[in-house]
Length: 98
Image 1 (cartoon, one colour):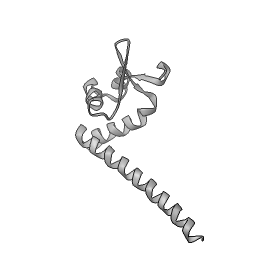
Image 2 (spheres, one colour):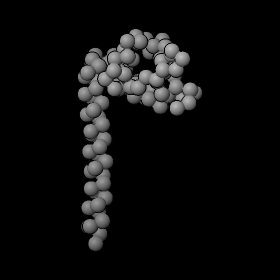
Image 3 (cartoon, rainbow, N blue to C red):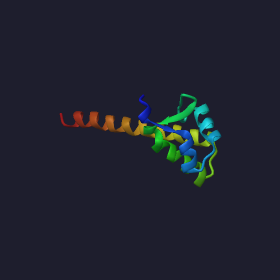
Image 4 (cartoon, rainbow, N blue to C red):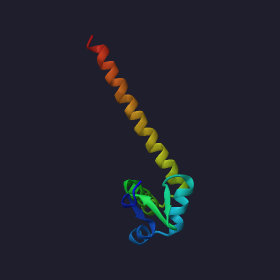
């Protein structure tokens, strides 16, 4: 991953008014991946959307980090189930047209 595709976590702390320890906790349980270059911590730019969801869930709903992990796992499972339903409907449609 190129350095221009990364965002410095210190800037995100200032922008979102979040402590650095929050990012460390998210990294520890696997919700984000912190990359370290030259003693600076970065996050991939394409993960900002998920990070914003995490921050909103944490701030607006007052959900702790473990609860956020549960929510994201449920959302991932829901997406997989929706894709499976779509695939099954497509397969069923093939048999109905015979």
